[in-house]
Image 1 (tube, rainbow, N blue to C red):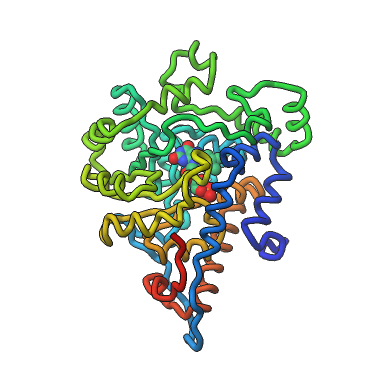
Image 2: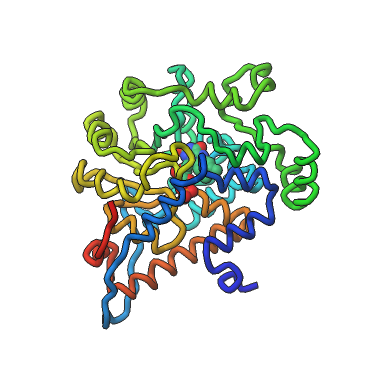
Amino acid sequence: MDLDLTYPAVSDLRLKARRRIPHFAFEYLDSATGAELQAKRNRDALDAVHFLPDILPGKVDPDFTTRFMGTEYSRPFGIAPVGMSGLMWPGAERMLARHAAQTRIPYSISTVATRLPEEIGPIAGDMGWYQLYCPADPEIRRDILKRARDSGFTKLILTVDVPDDSRRERQRRAKLTMPPKITPRVIWEVLTHPEWSLKTLRTGAPRIVLPESYLSQADARSSLAHAGHVIRGTPDWDTLKALREDWDGDMLVKGVMCPDAAKRLVSEGVDGLWVSNHSARQFEAGPAAIDELPKVRAAVGPEIPILFDSGVASGMDILRALALGADFVMLGRAWHYAVAALGEQGPAHLMHILTDDMKLNMAQMGTHRLQDLAGRLIRATG
Ligand SMILES: Cc1cc2nc3c(=O)[nH]c(=O)nc-3n(C[C@H](O)[C@H](O)[C@H](O)COP(=O)(O)O)c2cc1C
């Protein structure tokens, strides 16, 4: 099958994923919070970033190699942390980490992954980044950091935009509960998605194994959601200070949308900022992430490394974020649509879609280097 003709865009992978996995798993991956107006706002604001094309540029064959925070990557994009990846496709963490190591793009493992850092770290090699939901208990915090470091993760990402749950109504309607309740509806979903079900049977039911490893067995049995809460904690600025002291490597803060907070983070010794609104999964009334990116860049100046995510669905979107001040761009859902749609083949096909789209659009703009993109911007919203 010619993948490029069958699944030319991320939207094709999404539709295939929707057919191939149970409804509750797809809704977990695809949903945002509330009436999903912020998801629409993210999309509309990205679409509103326009560039002036240029003519007669000669052959455009850009070098996408990107040096970011001391490491060389083959592309200016990577894989954002996604909790419960193994729910979307059994073994997803291993597939994505392997792809990242082979192609030299970063893979971020979530605190609430279905695999342990000890298993995924060696697969990701020097492409592994560790995402932390900071636990309240300093002993647990330090132990997780030690485990991440010992497993080979080179950068720490502290996620700060989840001060509490968000209602995620679509997930509720899909009856996604932790732990999963075996209802007739769930049985029907499992029976009608046999490949997912058989592979899940072989791999084992998806569980958030790291948080569980800090609970007594009785606690772990009582509720997966409880494990998630224990591990997530309610970090404040003092927690950030303490964490900065505990981690001597690069530390990124993810979920930055506010220029004043960005400045304060830099003054607290954070090495990089990750502009994101959690792709509309947390706070529906907030602005589009891409609209805040230039403001955060302006607030902290040109030297601080900035990453961007939230709603990126094409190579063109990656170019938009780079032009507006990001040094690096991350995608969450797209990689998981790819894995859920095509298994092992998924990440390589998505990599092809994104890279080709970047290259072809750069030809239209006559830009030979990523650094030239900002010069072709004709309208940035915000
Ligand atoms: C299903 C799902 C689970 C996620 N889990 C986490 C997580 O555990 N930790 C985290 O920092 N971000 C998490 N995120 C947010 C992503 O890291 C990222 O910010 C977002 O998905 C990027 O937007 P995109 O999916 O539109 O590319 C999750 C996102 C999704 C879609």
